[in-house]
Image (cartoon, rainbow, N blue to C red; front, side, top):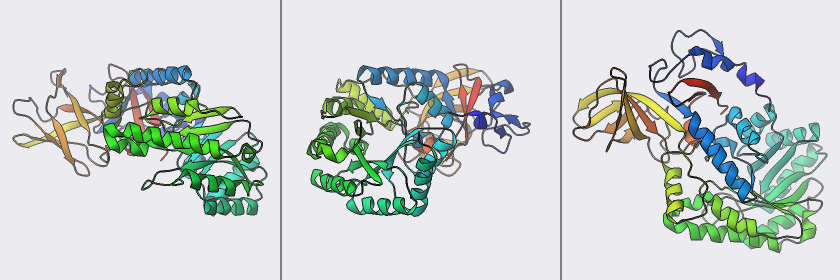
Length: 426
C-alpha cells in the first residue's frame, strides 16, 4: 500500500484532538510533538488506540487463521484507516472487505489490489467505476455479491453499457428471513446462481457468501442458528453444478467471522468440492475489539469452550474530564454522541486519572447511562472519590461507530505517550 500521501498530511488545531495553538505538522512527525495523554498535553474528549493491545490482537488472530487454514479479508468499514489496513495486509490478509463502493474508492486510492464488496453492486455510478477500474488495472482482483436475478440483470446491463472487458467476479449471497439482503432460501440461491450464469459474458460466478453476525442478537441460542445458517451455505454450494463456476480456479466460501469465526472454521472449513475451496472470514473488529458487545461474545465463546483464539484485548479507549458534579450520585463528562458510539451500548468507565496527584483509581459501580451531543451522564456510587477535572478512561462498545467520529486517532504506548497517529477516511 502507498501510505505516503497519508503520512505527508498536514494537521493543525482545526482537527479534533489537537491542542489549540499547535503549529501545522505532518502526520509522520506526530510522535515528535512529545505529547502524553496523562500530562494533559491533548484536549479531551480524546479517543486513543493502545499500541500493546493492537499488537496482541494482530498476532492472536494471525495465529488462529494459520492454524485453521482460513483466508482473511478484514472488513475495512470498521476503521476506514489505511494505516491499519496496511498492518492487516502485512499480517497476511488475502484482501480487504468493503461495504460500499465509496469505500472501494478509498482502498484503491491507497493501492489495495484485492477487494470483496460484501454488498450488492448496483447503480450507474458504482458499476461505471468498477468497470473502469477492472479495465484500467489487469491486476485488480474484485468481487461483489448478488442476491437476485433482477440484480444480476441490472449489473450485467450496465457492465455491457460501460464496455467491461473482463467479467465481474460475483458470489451468491444467502440471507435469513427477516434479515437484511441475501437470498432467503437455498432454492432462491440456486435460482440466482442460474441467473448469473446467463450473464457470463460480464459476470463470473465464483462462490457463496453470507453474514452470520446478524444472528448474534439471539445470545446463547445464537450458536445453533449460526451453525444452521453456515450449513445452508455449504448446502447451496453442493447444489450448484460445477460447470456454472466456469473458469474459476477455486470456489470462495465467505462469512463475517467476528463473533463466530470458530464456527466458520469448523463448518465452512469442512466443505468439499471438485475445485479447491477458499474459506474467507471478514472480521472487522478483531483488531481493536471493545469493552462491550464483542467482549460479551468472546466471554460467551470461552464459557462454551469453543475453539477460540487467544483472548482479544480492547484497544480503543475514550477519555473525558469530569466536568460537573451537580448532585449526589451524578457526574457529567465532557464527551457525548459526537465523540463515542452509543448504538450498541454506551461507553464503559474503566479508570480515573487524577492529574493533581498523578494517581490511578478504579471506578467500581460507575456507569454511563445516557449521552447528549457533548455530555455523558455517569452514575456515581456513594463513596466513590471523584473531583471536577479528573480524567475518566472509558472503553467503548462497537468500534464501527467509534472510528467514524474521529478523523485522527492517536496511538499510545503503555505510558500514554503518543507514538503515532492514524487517519480515518469516512
